[in-house]
Length: 268
Image 1 (cartoon, one colour):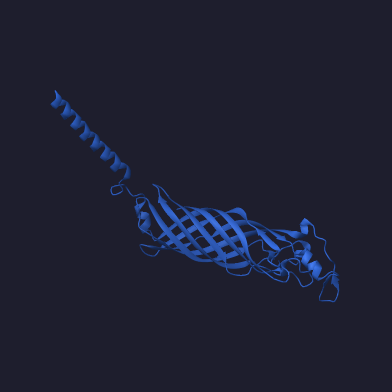
Image 2 (tube, rainbow, N blue to C red):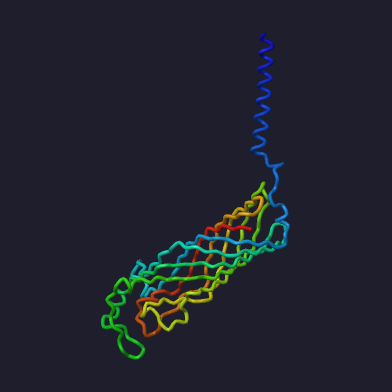
């Protein structure tokens, strides 16, 4: 009886161990798992679209005459969150490199605060001298004078070189970098008005560079790619006020360049 009991116990342990091994193997093995959309990686051209959540801000270098007071910056930029969307075109170069073009549209709003009035008024207590020899009146500022809401709509055309690793089951990490051309459809660059009539002007045509990292996930019918992207403008976007406008606003800024951080979801 004891021998039979021992045999049953050993058999149960053997079966249990085998079942546990099979279960573990089925859950965690990758060797025999099916690859989704295997042929997609060999296509010369593929297409898709993306959605983006953006955070745009200005990187500013202030003029020490009007834009700073000791160690205090008199112009502040408040970043905001916005969204964008675009299309994807990919050309396969080799097993590890792809060339991408991803034209998109980004809707952006930022807030600039100018705390320059006290300093400028102290410098020119009788009024700012204009080129025609007259004096511009001293402004007792309101919130409307101090704050500028800068709205931008960027047509973004990045060209990115992507390098990726080998697939691990149905995922693949990658990194990409490239250059951007960005047209601001709400720049007001050619506007006759300036900050004297509450119009803040920036450049229409801009250039920058981007860097991106992400992971590509292959499903049975599409590829989903969550990614993080940084885009940094290289040109000065600021359009200076007219010479007849007191230096409360743009003369306080030497250079102003956009920088953006994006959470991107790509569907191919």
